[in-house]
Amino acid sequence: MGLDTLAGRTPDIALTEADRDAFDRAKVLLCECEGDTSFRGKVYAGLVEDVTGVSLFREWIPPEVVRRMAAQLEQCDPVVVASSAEGRYDCSPFEVVELGRFFRLCADRGLGLVGSW
Image 1: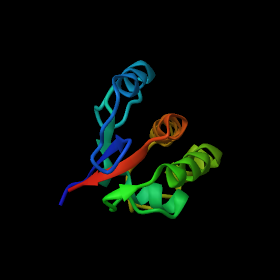
Image 2: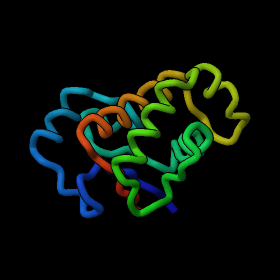
Image 3: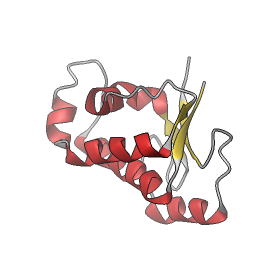
């Protein structure tokens, strides 16, 4: 089973053009989703849960939870996170930083996350 994680104003996504433009300008690089408003959640699910305690395998993660997750991703040490994966997931320090950027962009725009699988 795959998992896509999408930024959304509501569980039905409903992004504005300004939201889409903000993601396009940010050029967050996660799983070949440059400029996109989503990423392959299954690839990063273990990392995100280890750092934030929140599973991406949820239909809707509200904006207030995304804000907390963004802060936790920004405060973690990307090198330590990447090196402590111990085979549970494969990620680089760069990807940890990019996840933080994606979550911060969502948090700053008042967006939640939609899980689709």
